[in-house]
Length: 239
Image 1 (cartoon, helix red, strand yellow):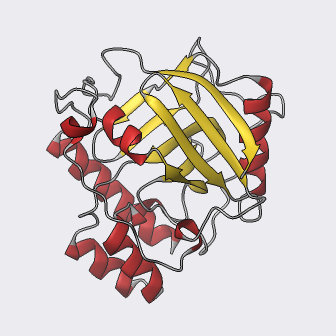
Image 2: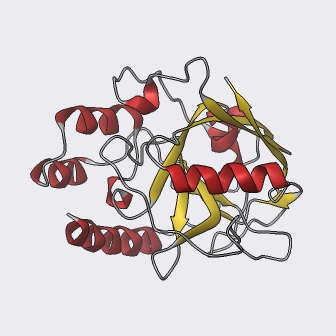
């Protein structure tokens, strides 16, 4: 499965580069400008059934608006421990989103001087993958670096509702994905080629329109925003 998706990811990245998905739409950051309509996803998958009372949540106060995500320490304990620990230390405060790939992801988690870190003195941790969590639109994920390890860098999946396309749906069907996962990808959108490589540790439940608006920010061919979008703070709380 890992080899299958590694090959699929390589193809997807190449296709994205050829299509110029890392560029900017040139639109502003208001709700109308995004032009993205997301319907409520009716799914029994854990990412669309919460949050419930007592769940751990992360509140992102950004210069574009507030984003709220529920976290899943029961499925991704190291990713959640690292993220919540760094947030409580104020690591994410007054930093900027470092990469914007419209129609794909919005990334942050680097310090003001561009460094990644962890609560373990900078020691990275291995990806945590599970069939319970997938790279649906709105997923909060820990990015794996070139060595395949994770640290403070996180991203929101900003994939469009019409992704994945029929060809990719056929591939994950052939790969043995559960029918519930396939139907949820079809309803929510997402990037199944990142499953079993990167770590999903949360899901946006409020403020996906803010994520979509941030994704409209002008960026260069590498995804670097032309103007800073600040993460004022990340607060860990209980729903």
